[in-house]
Image (cartoon, rainbow, N blue to C red; front, side):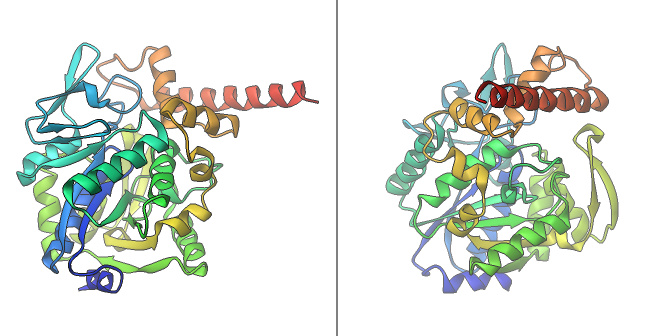
Length: 348
């Protein structure tokens, strides 16, 4: 089994925390990989960033720990949830994917907080390690946008990924797994594979793991409860589908192929060395600080988009037209570029 390559990285006595780092459905594939590790003898736990897509959550930004209801445990920088946990966002109650995964697996899941920046996130991970006995950490990103340089036109969600990658850099010997390259419709699959090759050239590539039938069965079980178009691509590919699938209200499309069943395993600190966004947000003390820094370097984020959707009245609509989303994103990026040009002119 391909996952046994990790025997060369971890000791069998290690307890491994597997974190879905991008919010949304990344926790689904993180759970799949945590269970794959269990099958070869490791003790694992599952963790997540709770940042739902705007079609599920009308409030910009990730869910705050204080907004979680029916917790198993609450600490300063993290919480533990189960399938009964929900979030109160404004005047609405929402279900989120980490709780849905917990419900599917009947297993508690750790959730981490982005609002206190990379410094707070590092504190949260370290407190989980100390309190729960974990010795190693793996971050899981579905699609591979964590590998972005920051200027890519189709990059939609750089903030959560860059903050989590920066945090992983501070955790000794942490790994990053990119599962199902290109499945989120952001960076193209060929581009993601090229970036992985760049990691390999720096001796940061560990190896690859291909989904098994057990993984596919578990993924199908989880997806009966949890929602994730990107994680669904791997399951479709495993079942033999090959072709285009529209996702994210039709704002993007994915060419589903067998590569979406593969997970690429890398050293997190090596990926960090190639990531301008992660380097920019490192050591930040709040999500807003990290977002402002990325904006100053011309990087429009998922947080910017959600705020712009609110300003334009889209978040409260029952049905969101994807053409409206594309238009607002385009206008938001153009506004950011104008602000950067104005600031550059002011300093001349």
